[in-house]
Amino acid sequence: LSELPRPLEELAAALARLPGVGRRSAQRIAFHLARASKSEADHLARQITGLREALRICEICGHLSEKERCAICSDARRDSSTICVVEQAENLFAIERTGAFRGTYHVLGGAISPLRSIGPDDLRVDELLARVETGDVREVVLATNPTVEGEATALFLARLLRARGIAVTRPATGLPVGGDLEYVDGVTLGRAFEARRDVLDEDAGE
Amino acid sequence: LSELPRPLEELAAALARLPGVGRRSAQRIAFHLARASKSEADHLARQITGLREALRICEICGHLSEKERCAICSDARRDSSTICVVEQAENLFAIERTGAFRGTYHVLGGAISPLRSIGPDDLRVDELLARVETGDVREVVLATNPTVEGEATALFLARLLRARGIAVTRPATGLPVGGDLEYVDGVTLGRAFEARRDVLDEDAGE
Image (tube, rainbow over the protein chains, first blue to last red):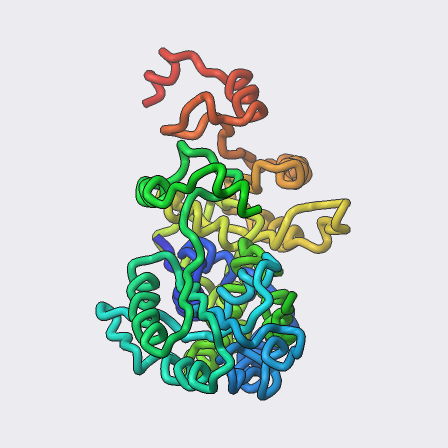
């Protein structure tokens, strides 16, 4: 059997380490780049190298930004008394796309994970506490991922924040809107039942 | 709504143009690269830039290679009297992985496509005819893709090659082995019925 030429194989291996790129997909991309024009390949390489230089971390919330303060932290219309804590910047964009939140954010840079040796000191926890201690923060929404690590991180932060007299909330878990009961995983369905709400109550709240 | 910072947006747009990378996936990769270490990002960029310099086109078959002749064309154990014509180098690897072919290859560099203004002169057709005219080629297997463009290219090449007294074959189309009739597309199923074989015949052939 013929092997891939070494430079192609090495590029494919590097691409396969990117999130969401499988081995086959990585090979297809490597072949594509081998055939691409010099300007297309060079342009992509320059964008990758330049990304770190063009982006910085917002000094307030830790979000990716071209300036010292990100677009959200410098927007006076955003409610700075409510801080939504997320693990990564991409989670922030997912929430922004819903349009359901008008406060500000705090990007932790990950979740606490003993297995991967990530502790609170590796995350932007001190920066969050410093923001909270300035005094005008009333509520912190802990929107870490609904995973074991995200839940543990939320619990850890909730204790620290409640001790400082801050209201701490977490987005509801439950059935996905528009989904089919049959396709909902057991844990989600179980939690949705535990957290079931009175129908009249729900109507009254709307 | 907050937009992605411009450098991230631009990289995501470039990544989304790669084969098999959707918009969401491109954004995830861009975020990953924004957080990656400088050495990881620079290494990937260098691999992309270096690919074109490290690879050349095999002078015989058009395959990607680090040397003037690819590993297959320089392997004396390969049967050079049988040439398998493929559109792109990745198709060649797909065939190599089966282990079902021990001849040599010819990479066209694409398929004839009037819609995309790709004619025979844009492909390595003259090089194929030159190889055939050296005299020791007996059979050409036209393994272009089973698409409209691949079929048209195979038909075009078959006429040129038969006029030169060469045996021209094409891999069989039919039901995928291990597949379920219910999930086979109608065109494939229809062709599989048209090309149905006598069961005793097939047994005898084994």
